[in-house]
Image 1 (cartoon, one colour):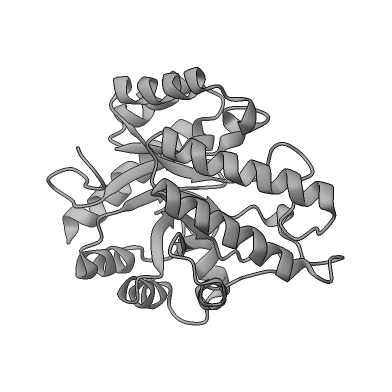
Image 2 (cartoon, one colour):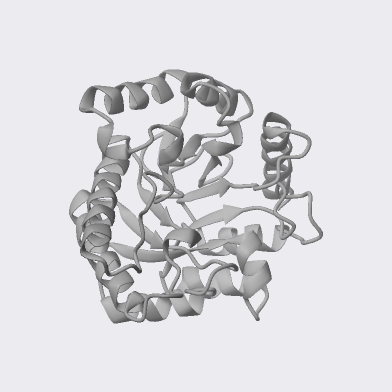
Length: 281
């Protein structure tokens, strides 16, 4: 497997968000993901260290080599600002602003050094506007800086629309921010569960439009009830038809929030269900 391509039977890569297996050591996370047929792990940095800036070049190299030895790629990062505590892209306090900018810069470098291609900025608790009158402007300043760093590093920094919180619920709202900033290093993405809760249009139509105009650069799949894809009421086959239509060649990441009956079983169910959908096309 090279570049962004998946296996011969499908053009994209299936990745598992690694917090699903967070109770396992990293090498076991990689081994389990590979055994279930995933091509990669999408990593939540808080599962690696309490502060990503403390990871040494040797430790980062070891993580990348461990994944490669187990047969998976590290496709990118998500849940970016969970640790260390106290980060916020909307808080204009100088010390918070400096600390947050420092961590974002470190994460862009970490993604690059691990061989990833995309960072997904969700982190709802670290982007709340309430109590910060200038919070939107502060957030856009952070994202503009992140976009510049991402472009330089050769990765894509995605602003994630979230159903919860008070800032950017839909892909359209994320695109408006992208247009305002105008950075080639920035894009948006689609989380199936969040989109199912927040979007007015059918989720597949939102994905279709976002891929057509090049603004959606990543896809996370899960059920609207926050369980694994296939454990909810929606028909995710429609999303895969859109991927096929556009010749999508990036990554499809599995990100359940409720692991039923447990993390490994949820990951296994997801892998089989999604491959079945694709093969059924």
